[in-house]
Amino acid sequence: MKYRESSLDAVFGALADPTRRAIAERLAAGPASVSELAEPFAVTLPAIVKHLAVLEHAGLVEHEKDGRVRYFSLVPAQLDGAADWLERYGHFWRESFDELHRYLRSERKAET
Amino acid sequence: MKYRESSLDAVFGALADPTRRAIAERLAAGPASVSELAEPFAVTLPAIVKHLAVLEHAGLVEHEKDGRVRYFSLVPAQLDGAADWLERYGHFWRESFDELHRYLRSERKAET
Image (cartoon, rainbow over all chains, first blue to last red; front, side, top):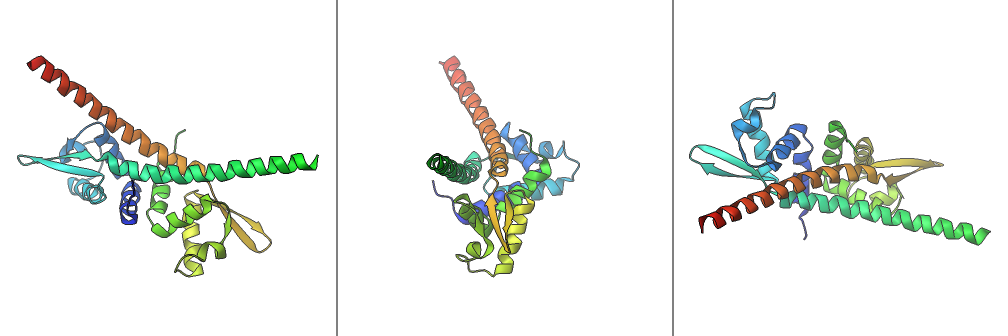
C-alpha cells in the first residue's frame, strides 16, 4: 500500500503530542465520547475537541453521531501506514548493517 | 523496552516533515555527509543542517567527525521505539475488533 507524503506528515505530526497519543491509546480499547475521553486528562473539553480534530484530520480517528453525542473511534489503517514506513527503514538499515558486518568479516578472513 | 514520552514526542515530531523523512530514508542506505545529504533536495545547506539537528535531537541520527567532515548515520533503535508504539495500538484495536466480531457472531447464533 502506498501512503501519500502529506498523510504521513499529518499522522506523525498528530502522534507527536502525548495527550493525542493517550487519546489514541484509549480509543484502541473501543469507541468513546468526548466527555469520556476528557475525563482522565487534566485538560479542558475544548482542548480535547481540538486534539480530536487533529487526529481526525490525520485520518487516525473518525466519529459517528448518536443523537447529540459524538462517538470517536480509532482508524488503525493509518497507524499501519506509519508503522510500515518505520519498519521499512529500520529494516533497510539493519540490512545495510548486516552487509557491512559480512564485508568486514570477509576482509578479516582475507587478511589471515 | 520502555520509551519515555518525551522521546516519542521528538521522534514523531521529527518524522512529521517530508524532507526529514527523506533524509532518514537516505541514511538507511548508509552514512552520509551534510553535502551528500543536501544534494538531492531543493533546499539550502543550512536548512539541511537544521533538519539534521532535529533528527539528532530526537535520537534518530548521530554523527562522527572525519577531519572537517561530519558523517551522519541512522540510529534504528529510535525507529523501533516508534514502531513498537504503533504496533501495540494497532494490535489492541484489532483485538477489540475481533472480540466484537466474535460477540456479534455468538449473538447471531443465539438468535437462530
